[in-house]
Length: 220
Image (tube, rainbow, N blue to C red; front, top):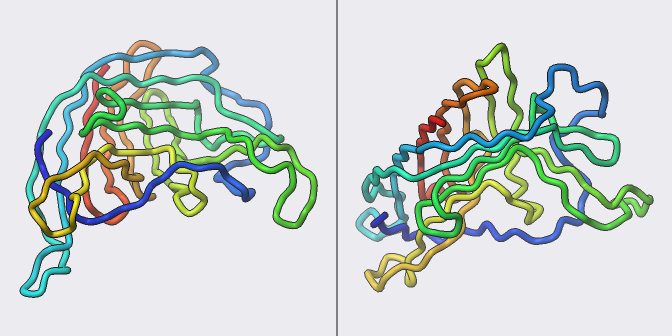
């Protein structure tokens, strides 16, 4: 995918040292999807690119252009993630991958993640070292499925939802670009359907710094 993104962003994934997460106390997972399933298909992607080089003195947010492309994609579902007596707030755990992860134009998205962190909380109290971080909150009614990314966990250095874009080597200078990892902002949405045999949905959102706005349509 050819385009330029000239605003510096930051989405490094590092270890977590704070207790947090969009999670609820664990309990019976009535209706939860219990078997691992993999849906393979194609994702149609539309990405709008922006930089901060507009205006007479530069520095203004401006639209660069739109890229449209298709990539192989896979959607993985399974039992809800749980740790330390808590369970994620989704009808099932899920991950979604578009393209070859790490290549420009690819996406990695997921509902929750378990990390190993300090065995003590910020108050010095002992706790389970396995920490559940919730990213998305979704719901399902029949086969209809929808929800929102409620926390990127970027502030804690624990992003999991990513877009692999490009970053200019020198901001606002036409000196080339390099691949760069961007965190997807909280507020991204998903809407569609998921059944035992197929999945079809649309995910829309933006990246940290508003370098990219995207729409992904998947069928598998």
